[in-house]
Length: 214
Length: 214
DNA sequence: CCCAAATTACGGGAATACCCGTATTGACCC
DNA sequence: GGGTCAATACGGGTATTCCCGTAATTTGGG
Image (cartoon, rainbow over the protein chains, first blue to last red):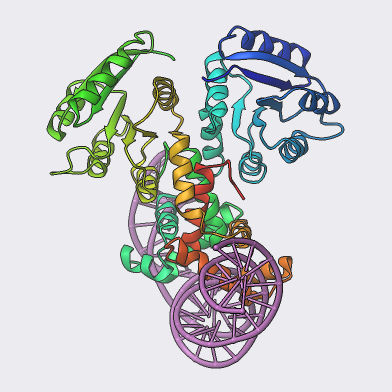
């Protein structure tokens, strides 16, 4: 919204990247320049030569040498001010977590995106907020939380609020052993290492996809 | 972006609400109708008569009878499809948590907002995504996480990843008692009830404000 | 009516975390 | 050079959770 943005697209597919470039150039009041890089080297060169605001990075980018993850991490290390929006064909639950939590990516978009969504993501990210595509969020949610039953979710929610197993048992008029079992099952279903990790995962997902919360 | 939105503003201040109404009506291609309600009763009537897409709700709304929280909760109960964007003068850390986690609010905006930000929030929320103002996020972050030291954050992060105290101690080459102390201090600083709750809070904040993560 | 899934629950021991307090070191600041 | 704070660490006891397994009862579809 303030000054026009400089954008770099890091993407294997020439067709896709040029298409996106053309689309973005339709909005000169928001976007002043759109560069395209087709490999890792080119991406780094461009980043060093121009002060890029936003990097749009294909996750399946240049899969032979480095993957998108590695590139995202390296870019964040060397150019922490550059905001990254990640593109993906098929969203994976693990990718999402790592990208946001560990690497610090700001945006996550599905490739079958419309112009509106793309621009929105860019603007949102440019202003310091984060953006995650709702389709992706839905996919992520479906992926694992479908398996968690209503009662289990209830207990996880109470855990997140800081209740102990005992307190939950009392509150729900069930045995502490039942609470224990529910937690155990959740932990297994979600591949959590322990309760603390379970809650970490839970809160992440809940934040990512608020629609189906509880 | 699809069909024009119907918006309801629930706000005490006639001046503010009318101003916002006028602003929003400048964009007929996005927003088809903007209603204003000045008390709780009026809000409910409007919600029952018109199928509102987005409710913009002042948190300090009608503080005599119900507060914004109660209203948000009631609206979500009776009209779960209505997306809520909350307005606030001074963001409070607790408010934020409760609104998003418990009530399921979709947006959080500071009152000294620009037109651009407001529209962006509305569009983002309309499409099923969530929006939190970056100023608010920053304020929230500053509020409490300033007190948490680097080492403490490091340990909290490892906890979130599912490591036990023992594992963290080994990884950082420190005693388990030190890890324990760090956790204890964090828990106190953030008013967490226990480690699980601490991580719940941590992950929420980290998601809300990704900029300063770790 | 039966089956799969959800919810309930227990035993028993090992492992961890929690809670009190106390205390030493080193860094940085006025 | 004294104050504050971060980071380190311990003792000792209590409370809680975790991990095996097992299993009775609902409950909701088909």
